[in-house]
Length: 356
Ligand SMILES: *Cc1c(COP(=O)(O)O)cnc(C)c1O
Image (cartoon, rainbow, N blue to C red; front, side, top):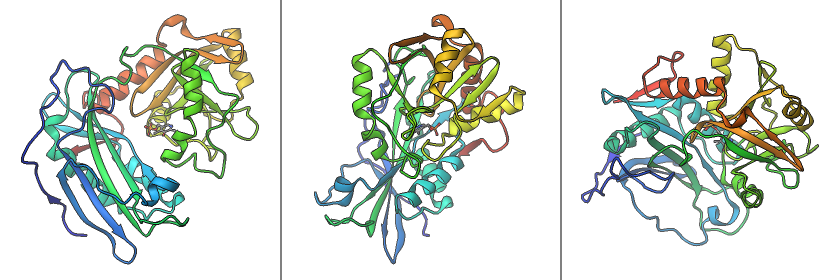
């Protein structure tokens, strides 16, 4: 693999000021990473180039059959101006698991990490520093063969784009209301639920629209076979604290294995808090919601890190949680993980990778 070529922009964009609320995923930096793939040649020409539009044939396979993989992670700037990535190795491993499920060629791990560092380094002045802000990193691969037949593409493009982001929820760390979906399903075991890919998101839209219309901000999915067991929220994994025990659904083949999920479980173990990864039925949740043993509930994901849940709704059952307040443990996970990400708290070995 050759070194990453760097071509800097000659007309840098104006950066959003410190007062800009940085609505999630709307502003993009001056540069992007790009690398191409051809069967027989492998991945070639890794480069950081000015952020640009793509010119593609309308027949490109990604537009028709959705062969694409994406990832999401963040870069943070510390008070002494160091640039940190949070557990990028986990995202890289997961990207290649997604790739293999989606018949996309794997990306060498060292090349992937170098690509992340190179593009973040070039655009490091774009990393916002106000509390709650960061630089969201979106790596993705698309199938580029101009062909309408159905088979894995022979050519691909891997890109990384960067977006300065504020707190995920404009309202700050406030409890969200979640709709437990019993009509649509997101994924089934053996399908692509474990892969981070657009197809899972388009499958979720109809339900999300319905939940929004009812005044709920996210959907909690049940398993696609029995429609009985809790899986995960739209773009987050879900945790409950019931009777002093932290519980989350086990990775059963249709749940996306979140890096934040994994981090919360590790912290529970480090802190000696009982944590269980197991099947959780919606009946158990409704019961715990009604009999007062549901102490806390929160979602985990890179974008919002920790999202307190203030109400769950299943059919006609409404289960308020925490009386409009953020749970004590929920807050502790948020403070600890964001503290580690910002380099203010030292986390477990290897969680922080510095970009130099
Ligand atoms: C990305 C994602 C998550 C959260 O994963 P993190 O690695 O914690 O960001 C959860 N569920 C789905 C469906 C996702 O796509």
